[in-house]
Image 1 (cartoon, rainbow, N blue to C red):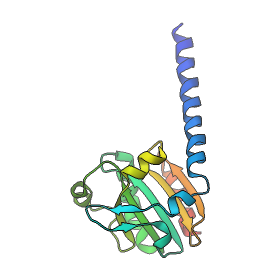
Image 2: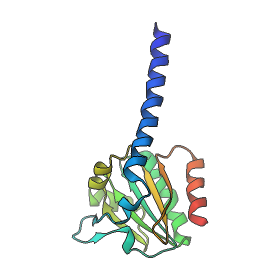
Image 3: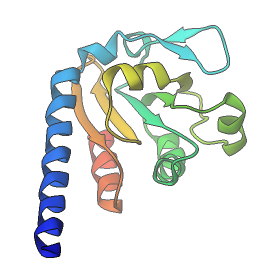
Length: 162
């Protein structure tokens, strides 16, 4: 009986994860919903959106200081983004501007710190970090929900370097 319960849990967990991916594909589509979305500046009154940014590539990263995986990815990106012509909206989810500033992550010139909580909730993005990469014509060319292995990071850097 216990064996059947374990099998059922594994099956339904896999099924649930697959359904989440299908649903995020339906909500995000080609990414145009993210291109025009206005993000409120973190701790400020200004707004930023992807279509208003310059760069060979553009990226939105939904992350949070309370997520170890998100902080790990942000730390790796901090160095890598120094040498890449990428404009980034750092969309912080469910945290304060002070805790973001204290970490000092994703703070270079072409990174805009924004409050990503409302957009994250509206789109029902199923995980953190969530990364969406666009080309200079605002076409989505890559996205990844979650960060598990260095392979995920290497794939992202490869896309940014193309």
